[in-house]
Image: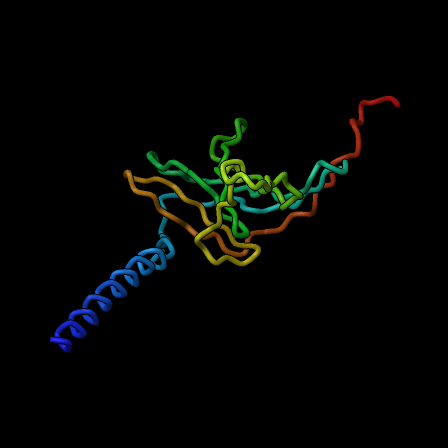
Length: 173
């Protein structure tokens, strides 16, 4: 009888431990999205350009420019992944086939540190890219025929840094 209780206890503990191990497995199974090799578009000029503001609190970052010379009907450009960050692609009003994403460099942010967990919950965690990219690579996400696709752009051209002026050049101080 003792052996039966011991056996049942071991089997029960094994089942409980096994069920906990499966919970962690679901989180670790986040695989990298599949990249498309032949997208429904042709790229024109693609480049990135670092910039810095002329004022102390102005910040700095990088603009990523992507121009499509041939964009099939039904393609909707969504996001641009660059340097472990994700930004929504913005269409420029002057050129409907040109998209720009502005990535801000990390700055000292107002992080709420409080004993009250509800106040700390207001902090928004940064969204990280699922792609492992070099500094000059980017990934464009787009919707085509109702499906989200990803296309990698390698070795983008780096343009010279933009240094914005310290003050309004029209100021007559």
